[in-house]
Image (cartoon, rainbow, N blue to C red):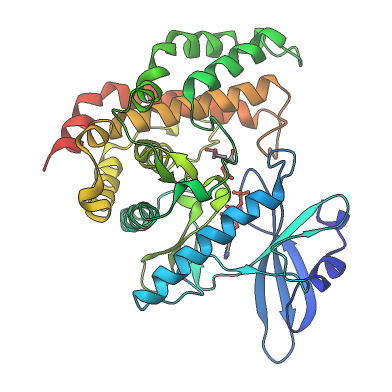
Length: 364
Ligand code: ADP
Ligand code: GN1
Ligand code: MG
């Protein structure tokens, strides 16, 4: 795959000092094509080079404007608080013409400063990492509370509108473009049986009970860098979906990904359990960082955010399976179906202990 881009040419468009050494595929994101770029010279430096998924992000200019605004805002706050702006937030490297991305006539590329000596985890190995990720996402939510939402372009409208996601799912079932419907009838029935979940947060946002805020919208553990030495959560990354949303969604998406005892795409479901202990860990970290800005209604709906994000994500994986694996990157056949299965098992696990989840969220 990586050979199809002329990395030397792409690199030469950016204001980077030093000689091109190499550029290799990197990370486990499902959306963009990510590469680690190494530049030699007096000092070896690394960068993240990404081909932006412009099938999904159709207005790259406005997407990148959002990211410029958010990263500038974040950098000013880090500087004010005496942090390290090169590690505590994402930094865009501009092209020689001063632009935030390069278009080669077909593909869009952007470059970020590589955050060294930090790791993004695909699964929780140590609860302390998960706690620190919660603090980092909680701080990020706090930071964005002062960000003027009207400046932002709504990159993917209805991104976490579970009712709209459900309608799209039903369309995919009916269209059955790949002839996979019969094979997954059991899974389809499960989603339909749980459809009453869909309105739970969307309706409260619509009638004003839950506030819309500027949120990250993709708060999984591999979108926060954990410092290898201090173990602290440093930069929150993957800012493509920063737009109006709910705190309950941001909280919930972290729970969806991190409180799984196995990987998101684990084929052996006997390994997949909802880890209530990790839920409590994340809750503690998140509440300690978001502080007083959280409303009572939001707090009451944190567990529902977790259920909904997991239900929605499972439904999105199953939709993609039905549509022929065109949205999420897959590395093997059936991967999206495996991902859907883990999410559905997690929803069952959460609903089984929902009262406990709620009691923990309300505990002062
Ligand atoms: P996607 O939208 O495809 O998820 P991400 O922006 O999350 O893409 O990047 C994919 C992965 O690349 C991340 O999970 C992380 O491991 C790595 N990564 C992204 N940005 C940086 C950075 N600035 N420094 C170091 N690693 C990064
Ligand atoms: C995608 O980009 P990445 O891999 O961090 C997706 C999220 C899903 C997630 C599931 C823009 O996130 O919404 O929850 O996969 N991002 C987009 O792992 O659709
Ligand atoms: Mg990502």
